Amino acid sequence: MSGTIGLFIRKLEQFGKLSSSERQILENLPIDVRQVGADQDLGWDGQRSSHCLLLLNGMVCRYRTMQDGQRQIMSFHFPGDILDLSGLLLGRLDHCIGTLTAVEVAPIAHTTLLGWIEQHPGLGRMLWQATLVDAAVFREWVVNVGRRPALARIAHLLCEVVTRLQAAGLEDQAFSLPITAIELADSTGLSVVHVNRVLQELRVKRLVQARDRMLAVLDWGGLRHAAGFDPDYLHQRAMPAAA
Amino acid sequence: MSGTIGLFIRKLEQFGKLSSSERQILENLPIDVRQVGADQDLGWDGQRSSHCLLLLNGMVCRYRTMQDGQRQIMSFHFPGDILDLSGLLLGRLDHCIGTLTAVEVAPIAHTTLLGWIEQHPGLGRMLWQATLVDAAVFREWVVNVGRRPALARIAHLLCEVVTRLQAAGLEDQAFSLPITAIELADSTGLSVVHVNRVLQELRVKRLVQARDRMLAVLDWGGLRHAAGFDPDYLHQRAMPAAA
DNA sequence: CGTTATGTTGATTCAGATCAAGAGCGGTGG
DNA sequence: CCACCGCTCTTGATCTGAATCAACATAACG
Image (tube, rainbow over all chains, first blue to last red; front, side, top):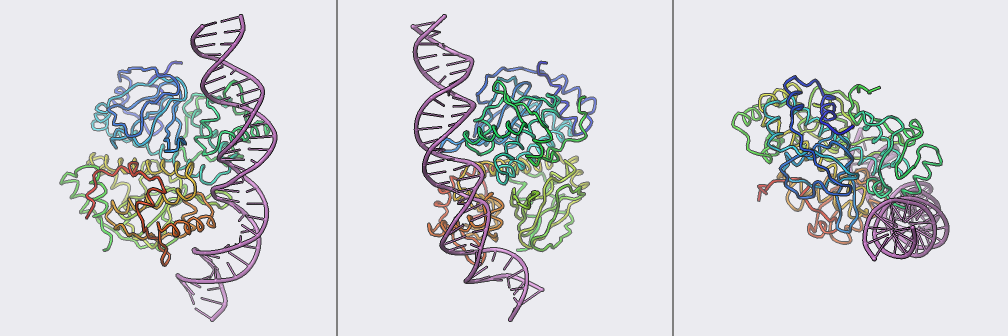
C-alpha cells in the first residue's frame, strides 16, 4: 500500500464533510514524492521554509536538542499527517523534524496552501483543527512527562501511538512499532537504561512483546490500564473504525 | 488600568496588520465583563461550551487532574489572551481552565467568532496563529519538564512568564508574579517541598526575590542563563517593546 | 482570633540516573 | 567469507536528585 493523499483526506474528513470542490482540489493535488532515509532531518530549528510536507509513508518525530546534547522528542507523526503547518503561519520552525524510518513525503508549497485557505475557508478550518489536535497531544505529553511514573509514561505513549495508528486505519490491534529504546527515552524524558528495564517489566506483565526491533502490543486492556489512558484528548470523532 | 479589548488587539497585531474593518469589528465588540474570584474553574474537562473567554484582567492556567489527585498545569494565560479557542473548533475541552487570581473575563459567543472567521479570513488567520503560538509553548513545556533539572526548570518557567508579560506590555523588568509554590510545583512536575528549596537557591543566588507571596526577578541575565532560556519559541515578532 | 492555607526545615527513602562492561547484530570493506 | 566497527540492547553496581514523611511556623481569612 503505497502512500497516497488518501490518508490525508481521510484525516481531514474527521473534522467534517469536504465539499466536492474541496475534495477535488485535494485529489488533483500534484504529488511530488520524495524519498528520504531514516534518521534524516526534514526540517530544523530556525528554518524558514517555503513548503509544508505531507507525510505519505513512514514515521517522523519533532524534537529539540539542548546545549548539552540531550534530546527531547515532542511528537510522532504518521502517514496522512501534514508536518510543517506551524512553519506556514509562524514563518520559522522552532524545533527539528526528523525521520525515524525511511519515509516518503510530498512537499506542498506555502503558496498552494495559502491559496486553499483563502479560497476554501472550510479547508482552512480543517487544517486549523488538525493543528489544534496536535496542540492537544502536546498538552497530554506535558502531563505524561510531568506526572506519570516511568511505566505508566511509556505505556501511555504506546497507547497513544496505537490509537492514532488505528484511527488512521494503518494498523490493527496487533500493531508493531519501529522504534528504538533511545527514541522512547527521548520522548519520555527517561534514560535509555531505565526504558530498557521498564520494557522488560511490560514484557513480564505480558502487556507488550519485542520482536526484531519492533514493539507489539499483546494486552491492550492491560496496557491501557497501566497507562491510565483516556483517548478523549485525541479528539477522534466517531471514527469509521475501518473494520 | 482596567482590562479592555486593547491588549487583545495588540496581541493580534503581532501577527500582521488589521484592516480598518477588522479593527472596527474588534473595537466595537460588545464586552460583557464578568468578575470571577481566584481558584475558580472557567471551563472544565469534557465541557461543551458555546463561548470563548477573553481574559481582560488577572491570571489563569490550564490544567488537568489525574485519578490520584495529582495536578499538572499546562500553561498560564495573561490579559489579552483568548482562552477557549480549542473548544470553538474541537467542540469539547480536554482540560480545565482555572483562575489563579481574581479575574475579569469577557465571553465571546462561538457564533460571533465563527462569523469573524467567515467574513474576515485575516482575523481568522490571526486567531489560528495565536493557537499555533500556544502550541509552541506546550512543546517547550514538554522539553522543560522532560529534560531540564529542577532549578533550570523553574528558572525557565519564570523567564517565559516575564517575557510574555513584557511583550504584552504588562510588566517591566522588575515584574512580580502572583503565584504560589503549589502552582509552581504543578507546572513543573516537581513536589512543593522541592520547589521551596529551589526557590531558596534562586534567592541565595540573588536571581529572584520573594515578597508578600509575589516573586520578583532580580537578575534577568542570571536567571536566563540558569534556565538556558531562548525566547524564539514564543514567536514574538519585533515587539514594540513599549519602552 | 481560631482556622485553614501555604511556607519552611530536617530526616529518610526511592525512582530513576549514571557508570561500566559485555552481548548481539547488522553493515562494510578487504 | 570473514574480521572489524559501530550501534543498540542488556545487566549489575552505585549514586543522587527529588519525593515523601513529619513537624512546626507563618500567613491569609472569615
